[in-house]
Image 1: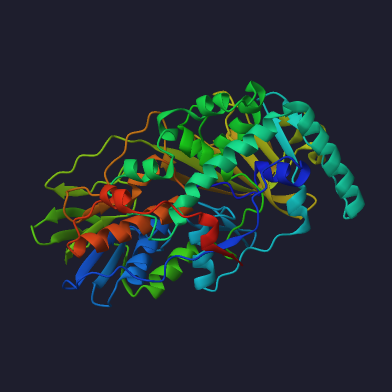
Image 2: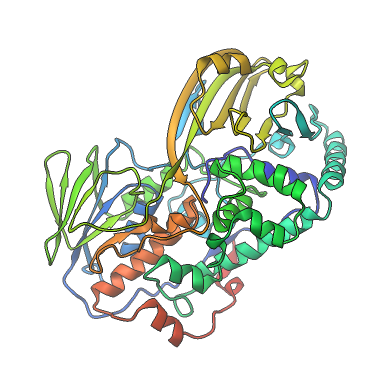
Length: 513
């Protein structure tokens, strides 16, 4: 879900221009079992959640939704160190236009996000006719090794002819590997869809390893994406060029990243991608609102102490809070929370993505071209340390000589470099995101339960893959885990698996929108 690319992305070209690319099928809405978890009713528990992004807000929502009685869960507190909710979902305004600055694309099979959008009466961002005509160029630092043709015409016939030509160009360059990539992505998606099955066939999970094992995804984080794709029969050229462009855009990393996160990157570059009108952060805000949450903005948690029957959380404001359940729903990698007693989790680095928004005009000379019109609307790059950016895309064409661009890079871009890349810069906005883990196979995972009592870590799942939807999937599992353990149900996910019936066909759990 997990990705920062918002430009109708790479494989949109393939979906629109190549008939061989992934057929993602119709959009569906998940029917989660309406029956809540039924156990004897313990005293209401106060739940403290650190983080107001999609993981924290989804957790609050699922805790309320799945509680057998209103008294199962008492007060839910969410602590956010910033002044707005949404975590890594955020927007920026350039030239009076709102653009996604963080997590920005959603897949048509992101069923939790679809449910949230409908539940909250949000709207999908309206597409324009030009969304289907994005031109792509793959830049090696000195030249474009591949470019699709672009067309500046509103006539459908001309657009169709150019699309067919691009189909032939893509097929000529990558051949049958496009079919194999489609098959690989579909196979991974089918396994991920098991996380939407009903409670009758889907257990809850106490560890990330169990969660991956049950869905058939356990081996992917143990190997690199490159190894997986070679075994799947993809050509070296496709991996070196198109796949690398996708992973650099969606995760800021190369094909040596671990296999599951890389597969999510490929799936997150398909067709029919969508976003919430006005900003994806509204999902988090809406879920927090309907979940009757006590929201603490501008309040960072400094310490979490286990007092035996409860946890004490102390904040930067000097406040102290008591909770029966404490949940960390934000990456611990760059936080300074002190735990008593101490916790132990595998060391993990975050991959920083520097997102630069520029209103201005690119310099064609930088790309060895003569005119602005020759520069593709999406410039992807190969894996080369000498290339200073991962991608440049046109977000909005205000006028012929006035556009808004979005640049992804691994390092901040100096003004001197930007003045070479751009002929004109009217406005420049820089954002540094600790966006997702730096993936390296084989991955190791932090536990969901940090102290064997009621201290939980939703973002342990990010070591497998990071996206808005994976955050919601992990949060839904943690909600079930919390409620079952609060009820005194000792049944682990493994024993539930042994006693459960064969998994039902997930297609039977969906209905057409």
